[in-house]
Length: 257
Image 1 (cartoon, rainbow, N blue to C red):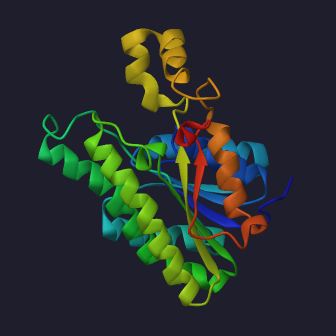
Image 2: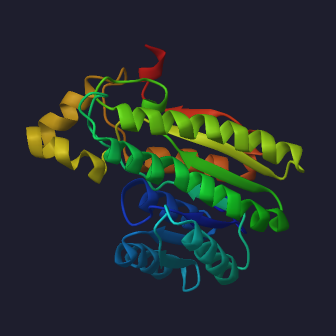
C-alpha cells in the first residue's frame, strides 16, 4: 500500500472502464485523484465511491470535454486547486471506430483523431507547467496495441493510437530536456473487458465474444481493467523514476507474434 502516497492525479475518461479502475487503484495506493469525463454524472459517481472508501477529499470530479482546449485549462486549474497540486496526468479518454480507408467517413476519422490525439496535446501542453512545481511528475498516455499492430478495418483507431505512441516519446524528450522532473510514457492494452467491447458482445453473446477475442491473444484470454491500472500505477509511482519515452505493452503477447 501507499505506492503513490502524496501524489495528485488527474484521470480523464474516468467514469467507467480503464479510467474508473485506474482512478480507484491510484486512490487505494495513497493518491488524491481528480476524475474527469464528458459523462459528468458518471465521473461524480466514481469520485463519490472513492471518497466513501478512502475519506472525503480523496477524490474530485468534473465534467470534461477533452477536445476543448479552454476546458482543459479550466479543469486543470480546478483540479490543481482542489488537490493542492498536480504531478500525475493519465490521458485515458478515447474512442474507436470500425472502418477501412475506403469505408470510413472523413468526419469520423477526424473525430477519432480529435478525441484520441488532440486531447493529449491539449492536456500535456497545459498540465506540464502546473506539474513542474510539484516534484517528480508522470504523464501516462493510454494508447493501444492497435497503435503498434495494425488492422485493415480500424484505419482511424490505428492512426490515432500510433500517433499517441510517438507523441508520448516527443513529450518525454521535451520534458527530459527541460529539467527531467516529468516523465511521459504510453500504455498499450490488448482487448480489455470494458464497455468498449459491448458491441462485440451484442453481436456474439458475452461468452462467445470473450472467447473469440481471447483466441487472438497468445495467453488466451481478454484482460481485466486492473491489468492496465497496475501498469499505470507503476508508471505513476517513483518506482519508475528512470522510465520515460517507453511503450508499455499489456497485450498478452500479441505484439510478439
